[in-house]
Structures are given as structure tokens and as C-alpha cells.
Picture 1 (cartoon, one colour):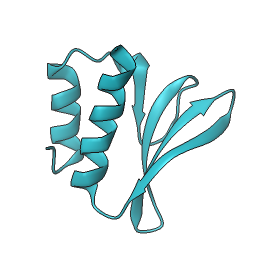
Picture 2: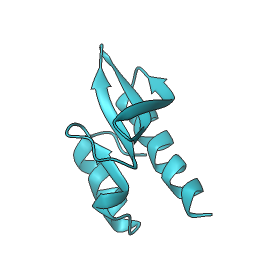
Picture 3: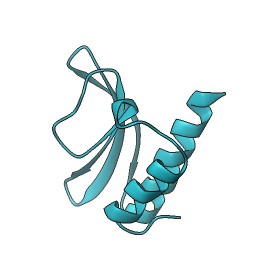
Length: 77
């Protein structure tokens, strides 16, 4: 489970996710799964047509990173 943004990026790269599939922090690219630090916590959302579609919120980066990776993995099935 990644405990930093650098570890998360390394995990994403190791698992073969393309940068065009996700956004970690702004700017957010259209049609991607996004992770953003907001209000003292972390939000996961899909960014589509300039709109955010919430997926989940977490207080800890490690929990948010794990769910972010799991959500991307489920998208491959």
C-alpha cells in the first residue's frame, strides 16, 4: 500500500497504468480517475466533461492510494 504520492506513482508505473488513465493532483485531465488533496483529506473522483463525479473520500493518503489503485484495477476487468 503506497504511503506517499511518489510511492503511488511508482506503483501505477509498475502495474503498467498509463498517465493518460489517471490524474494525481491538478491539473485534472478529462476522462480520468483523479486523486486530490482537499480540505485536510483525499478525494477520489472521475473527471468527465469538466465535471467531478465522486468515488470516495479518505483522511489518510495510504487508504486513498489503496482505493485509487483498486479502482483502476477494477476498470481493467
